[in-house]
Length: 314
Ligand code: NAD
Ligand code: UDP
Image 1 (spheres, rainbow, N blue to C red):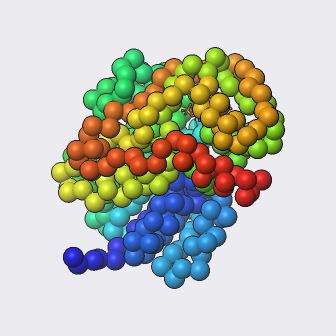
Image 2 (tube, rainbow, N blue to C red):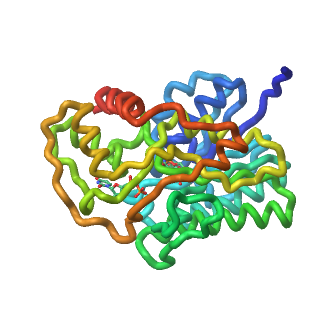
C-alpha cells in the first residue's frame, strides 16, 4: 500500500479531543498544524508533541481568517462543555458560525477536505429515540444552550451549502458524549465532575433525579471514527453519528464512578439545568455500514483509564 504524508490542520487542537487527534495523526505519519486560541485548550495537552518536527502550533482564533496551505482540515474549535460555552455565548455562536465560514473558505481556496465536529446537540431534547441522522431535532432557539446547538446547526448548513455551491469536500460528524484522559478537570461535564468529586471525597452533584440518560464513548474510539470518516470517498458527506450506543441513566454513572474509585462520596441532588435533554443515545447503523466502525472500549474500562488520568493530575 502506498502512503502519502498529508499536511493536516486541526482547529481546537489543544483541547480534549483535538490533542488526541493530533497525536493520532502524527502517529499515522502526517504533518500536523494545531490551531487554538486556548480558550478551553491547554498547552499541557500537547506538551508531549512539541518535540516532534512534524508538529506545529499556532495561537489563532478561528473567527478570524487563516491563510495556510493544507490538504485536510479537522474543524474542532469550539468549547464543548455547557459551563464553558455559556460563559460567553455570543463568542460561542461566532466560533461555530464564523469559524465554519473561515475554515470552509480556506478549504475552498486550497482544495482541502474539511471535517466538521458537529454534535448530538443538533437533536436538542429529542422526541425520537435513539437518534438517527434523519431526525431533525427539537432545539430551543432562545434557551441557554441555543448558542451552541444553533451555532452547530448553522455550521452544518454552511458545510452543505459550500459542498453544493463550491464543491468543497465535506464530512460532517455528529459526536455524542465523549470522555477520557485530558478532559479539563473543571469543565463541568458530567464524567470529569463525578470523577474529580469522587477522588476528592466531595459530594457527587447529580442534577435532577439522575434519570436523564446519556451514552458515553471513550476518546480513542471516537478518534478512530473521525479518521475513518475523513478517509471516505468524496460522495460521503455525512452527517454521521459517532458515539457509543450503551445508554445509561446519569445516576448509574455516579454509582459506577463511586464504585470504581472506592470513594466515600455521597450523591446529592442539584436542580436540572435549563433545556437539559432527558434522553440521548446514538443510532450508529450508518457509522457501522459506512465506516465499518464500532466502539471497542466499554464504560468500565474507559472510566478506569480516565480515573487513572485524573489521579495523576490532581
Ligand atoms: P474542548 O473545549 O476541550 O476543545 C475545544 C478547543 O477549541 C479548545 O482547545 C479551545 O481552546 C479551542 N477553541 C475554542 N474557541 C476557539 C476559537 N474561537 N479559535 C480557536 N480555538 C478555539 O472540547 P472537546 O470536547 O475537545 O470538543 C472538541 C469539538 O468536538 C468541539 O467542536 C465540540 O463541539 C465537539 N464535540 C465534542 C463532544 C464531546 O463529548 N467531547 C461532543 C460533541 C461535539
Ligand atoms: N450532570 C450532572 N452532574 C454534573 C454535571 C452534569 O448530573 O455535575 C448531568 C447533566 O445535567 C446532564 C448530564 O449529566 O444531564 C450530562 O451533562 P454534560 O454537561 O456532561 O453534557 P450534556 O450531554 O448535557 O451536553
